[in-house]
Image 1: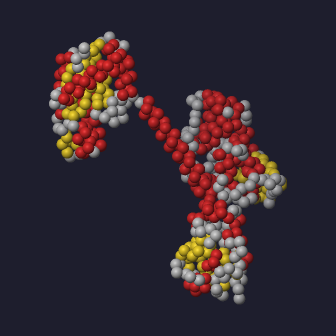
Image 2: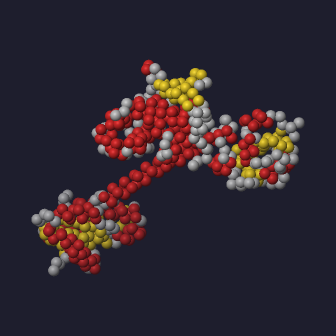
Image 3: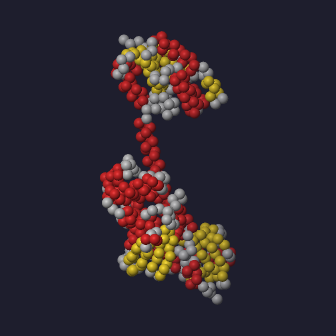
Length: 194
Length: 318
């Protein structure tokens, strides 16, 4: 797994629960305390072990924890969250544009980090206010992270949405229902870098 | 008849201006109006500094020159360099503009948004890429910095001289501390190369490095595996040999100095270096006063050099 993924998990645990909790997660996974490098590659099993350990130490179901991780990538005042939400805002002027642009998200990310291939997403507009987002079955739990990202990005755009995972045999899809396109003013975004 | 498709142009090329035959602006796209607050009725050469083509003195001359590529800057913001394309139309021309490499600057100067660019334009992708690249570059620089400081720490913690594989000063100190607990005699030898500076200055540092590696090999050859060999900077070597008699040590040093003195060929040139040494034979416990012992031994080395080099002298302990 790309180091960026492991870094995201590490930062999520450290920022949300503190360094001591990260040490406990590493201990639970029977690892020395890890500090992941964002640009190195790590064994896939390591990522899975860390995730399992985090669920156990934090006493949270994996889906729920990964959704929170997705939210944390975008929301909050940390430099990395500010940077991530800015980069995602470049993909569309409105939340609907943003949803359409999810088709290109994997390519867009690879443009910045060429060796980082995320599972591709496809977006289907069922009705003007109902979108289906599907993910390739490559990374277990990936769509949980995407759910968190979509929720946080809806907030960014000031849109009220309902997001549901679709029925069990189609677990890799999310249903995004737009309830109110101007629920809040959303966060201001300028092309000009901070 | 004036040009007929202003709405189409507004959508597809929001950064355009329509000029009449005199080069006076008669229409401007929405983004163009952000750059030039009140362009209608003004001459294009009053609004822009023409960089290319050169030699255009008045606006009508530009129109007469016909279709072509332009480089120009708004007079209000000369740091912004626009790329332009002029296309003649009946009774004038359409001038379409783009920000080229001034994109970031222009976005900041004019407070541009995604809607200010044509839907097919790559401007926003370019801005995304600039920011994403800056972040990726920062991550890479951070990794390099962390690796560098880890390496520096590892090097300063190291006990080995990277060039020769012998111990360094730190390694030697560590070895001395261990050795002085042993109830045996040890010989401390301080050895300097002769004429080494000539090799370094004459043939360069890489030749010098080769010589130092060669000497290290000879030291290993003339000693036993558990003897302590160190290079403490430059061409100074320190040896600690245990369980040797003075006669035995004298023979070893004779052999070593003779072999170091044999001319060697480096990078096609013959180098004649040599070695001088001072030594002392003491009970290992006396290494407690290492600095003292080393000073006395160093005096013997100095005497060997003064006596014409290529020899070794036993230090006299008062």
